Image 1 (cartoon, rainbow, N blue to C red):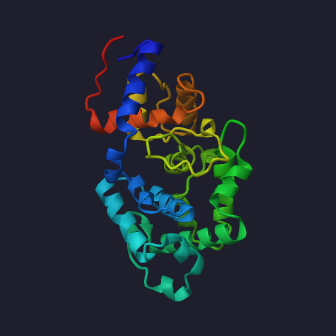
Image 2 (tube, helix red, strand yellow):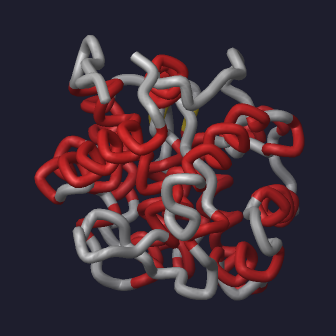
Image 3 (tube, rainbow, N blue to C red):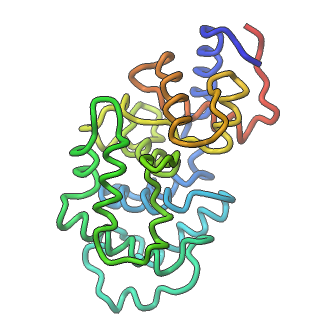
Length: 262
């Protein structure tokens, strides 16, 4: 399965071209923010959809659709202008372990971030480093949980400094930061370079990366994220995370993964 570097790059570039395509949006969580045109609506709907992006994708979309419906399909306006009475009717399970209490806290925390901290982009841009958004993810989490909250809600926002791969946050950041002419990622946050992004590592991308000899570490943790992203930077130092399309597409749509010898 392992290829020489040139052959592997050509193979992955071909798969990026195939899967970085708007025809795949409909069945992906990114379809939720694609419903909106206002920047803040895209950010909030994308953040919430990414937060619950684990498990069956049909279920993810159904759950995200319910959250948008609760917010009147105007997420930014709801976050900023909701009253306590608007939150009282939110009950039950939103998605698996993400329940009504978690959803309500996320709404309140987002209101605080937009009204008091200048929005999500401002936080991530402020705390980024020259080569990583890991410190920004950590600081964003500290700010996000700056209001009184149930400790269990913290499980829904990962912190790479604790070893987590932070797959869902890295996926959200790809949506917000990455830009090209394909129309899938939004590229709204132009103050953050695409080279700072990390691969959204999950079971699919990890398995394919190991099959292709791109990743040696066995655990899908932050160390593996850095190892894999660094390897992908050798193929494209300015946009390494574009290969998320290739690895995820191969893992989900092509089983078993087949590679032509180079």
